[in-house]
Amino acid sequence: MSEFYQRYQALIAQGELQSDADQDICAQRLASLQKELEAVPPRGSLLWRTFGKKPASPKGVYMWGGVGRGKSMLMDLFYNNLSIKRKKRAHFHEFMLDVHARIREERKKELGDPILPVATALASEARFLAFDEMVVNNSADAMIMSRLFTALVEAGVAIVTTSNRPPDDLYKDGLNREHFLPFIELLKTRLDVISLNGPTDYRRERLGGVEFWHVPNGEEATNALRDAFFRLTDYSPDDAAHVPSEELTVPGGRTLHVPKSLKGVAVFSFKRLCGEARGAQDYLSIARHFHTVLIVGIPRLSKDNRNEAARFVTLIDALYEYKVKLLVSAEAGPDALYPEGDGSFEFERTASRLVEMQSDEYLALGHGTSEAPAP
Image 1 (cartoon, rainbow, N blue to C red):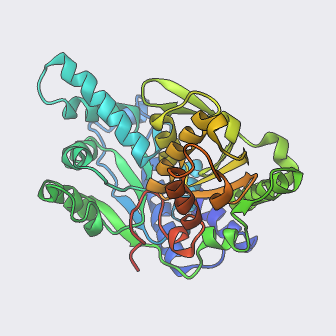
Image 2 (cartoon, rainbow, N blue to C red; image 1 turned 135 degrees about the horizontal axis):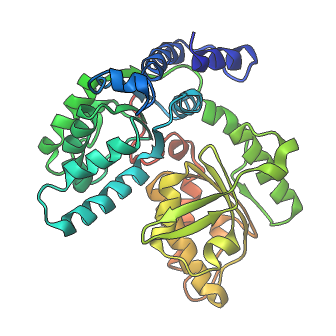
């Protein structure tokens, strides 16, 4: 029995997970993949050289299902218990941003097709790639993915990915989708497609009874958000002083400090997010990277802090676009946050979005998607 599967069974025994037939099927498949990957000797070792040729790429896994069914949990557990050196885990949006940057650099060399050398470089860095929340929203990604992933698989890279949609529904009704169809066939042929749609929505279960908008600012509201963070991340309040932070890379080479970052949940102060000079790229990076964001200390907005208000509008647009869950402490509710003065009329659309972001319909949407997950 693999170390990953033992750990998964232990979580069920400890009551941290509920028994779930879909999850167990997927966990057993991942356990088999772990054995295959760990059976290959380390690159450059004597045993590796005696292979005489590069080992074939093990068949990967495509996990899809509704929000909160444990896809990311299984992938994280698998990744953390996989004992190989050349492995990489990334949010799918961040991975594609990196791919586009690499392709731009290759094009500068004017040596022909830029995708193959990018795939070769990626394969040299990792023989296992894990992607969270595969979703395709633009034609640029769709045009690249089939050739890139074919080259990665042929180079021996094993892939595990999660998605809210089955492969056939990726980039549905997208522009020039016919060019994307070979990638769908590649997924169905080279990865085992496993549905996770068990009875327990762990993310919604953790959010059950949680208030999303706390008024007014103060110790009580801050403590409520603190408790929500620990509930969402299963992190012990006893270890509050050791919650990890993160340096989030923003396109252009800049970094954004995330004071608290754990399991796709981030905590920021309003002052840090909107009181400093930031733009759409900062907020889009946050929206792509985190499925849930907590913001502490939102003040009343007016013409006196119009720059902060404008940044806040841009931030909410980005979070809304990627269907990020939002929990806040603020001086007033959404409709009373910008009550009057220059800019208050334009803020009405943002206030409406803030109300919608607390609705059951919005909360049922998967991160990065524009539609509810398939049943």
